[in-house]
Image 1 (cartoon, rainbow, N blue to C red):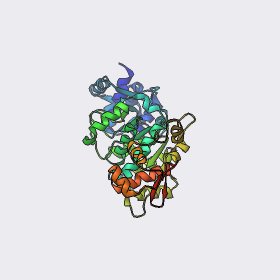
Image 2: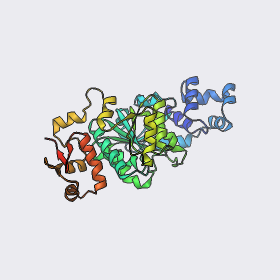
Image 3: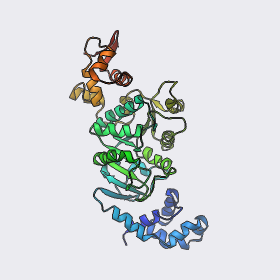
Length: 363
């Protein structure tokens, strides 16, 4: 019997999570030895719950075979911890998943990644900000990692995809299920432009307790985590704290003191997260030599090359003479509230300047 059967069977043993799995591997070397020797070891019998001992003596080979059959689908992969393709950064965390289930480009998992997370109920400005940061970071060669949730997660994935970059969605359920269902089309686009990944085997339902657990994978795969909008008690802050525990960078975007969605970001900033105002602030921390920064891309491709499509359209609507907000609303058809967010991005990236009477393009 192939070794992968033993990995999958051990993964299915009740009450054996990543930490117990690691401990058994450290003691016995590989899952085959765990099944053959652990049930007869008195110290193990004392340490493990009865359900786990029963699972070790009665392996669920049929389910392991079903998992392996799932991996035979086009674009599907199984990555046990001993696979050389297992992402190196994730392997460094305290409790790495024993097996990763992947749909899509397996090489994306080993690429340099930045996580973008935030509120499931963001403001329009927050959604635009996540989309724009994701697009700019993706154009700079980074993979954008998030959790496929509604809100900031979805905006981050869409920003990377529309920019022609790669993105990874870490799921809190088996990959035979798309959750939330409204993101079915987005999940397909992510699979085509990156990967869907989970530590949960096929058939695992999206239970509430699974999502905090998956958050450590989002941060563990990434060089740093950007929080766009978040409440003081939210899954996004769980991801940020996991990043800190894993020794990774944490970035936060400040907001209005009157915006309750900004309070989680302000809490992170007080705790030492790096305040960011543009993608370059993140690239300064995570970009190695050879990754193109937005400034370099602009120099090579022209002033609109690093901009998300909507922002580029707004830039083309701004004259070198002062252009009023009312004129921009009329020219672009974009509501003033959203327009201010885009103008702020254009100003921070030195494409425009605020002037009396509105904004003007830089020469």
